[in-house]
Length: 572
Image 1: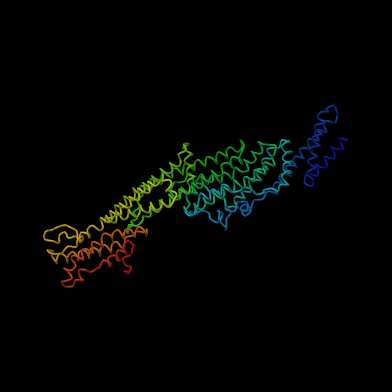
Image 2: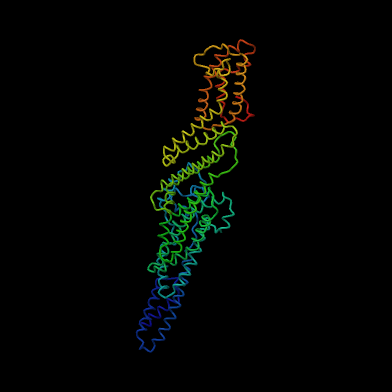
């Protein structure tokens, strides 16, 4: 009876597992049973021979199992095409064109994109890992693996699994666009190229962890069910190489030379690592994967550190910016618009920045920390602008320049989330500073010409009362002195018109209010002067030579001030 079973088992084993794996595995169990039985019946003369034959046959059987496991695993292990991976992503993160980035963009920043909204969508989205090996095959692979483990062939099993699955995983990532880049490669890249690669890396990390590694973990858990330490070791060894390629790129960025424009990509990278934190912990569980976990969490910390240091660098760079870019027309300086855009972007990253501050400080004061950093950046900008304003020889243009730039800062803050953080006090204080510079501009630009329209110096008594009021008469006033005053006024006004129509006040509302403020002082004084002293000139020769303008002419010409007109442009 036993001999018959042994012969039956031998026949099935020699035939191999390929045609009927189930009966082949049954034959192995039968063979093991025979060995156990004869091992306990050592009194039978033929026992030793049967045990030896059975053991030899079992070795052959396990060897064939190894081949079968390898063949089946190999035949069902295929790289995942990028399109299949994109189909597993939530709609909001699928590329709309050939680019690997979400919505067809590899990176590129636009303040109008609501970053925090996109971040929330990404974090709360549902991801569906792809099926890497057909579910019907996994129980068979599990049974083959179980026999190999029981036969003590764990190392062979590990090697077959690692070599097969890791190469397929790496090929899936390569097809997606993942490149192996050294620190030297990263350092040599142009910023635009590097920025695009960072945008892609963020997308690759999300796909790798949430789809490929999550799918690989499912396969591994099912094949090695019941063998926890082997399961984690296999998974760790399959993923180690590709994880290393991905993390080393992040590491190269974190350790590369710091510069202000890198802050936002560092925050993007830090965000994705924070987003993936719990999944990395769950997918790369167990002692065998501890090195991978530590590498990932170490990168998160390094990115936070570099981002925080870049923050500090930016504040210092703003204060010390020594660009000689001369803004000849007194308009908003490129540094001002750059810094304000930078600060606007920062507010898109509020939650991330608060998290980043917590990495180094456990106190829950991250909001006030962000406010103080922003205030320091704004103060650094003002300090720098004060220095730049001293390049102007004309003090009126100095004040116009500062008025324009601080107004731009105030207006931008009022229209952004920065207002909530910096507060109304900051806004009101800086609006007063804008008004002070507008007043100083008026004083410096118009005091001299307004002096021409006073009675001072026209009478023999030298009285200094201003023209206007009761209108008075012009007795005791020299016609020659009045003519001279009109000539001086005309010359000075034409000079101001020529010069200040080239100056710029870019904000429409501010430009109009400044013109109005000048007109409110200039036009009544001019009308009064003409009314009082005009008859003296009009009764003489060529009065139009002296009274060249009526008040309406001056008003029209004031309407051309601060337009940034080129000297060569035809007059309106």
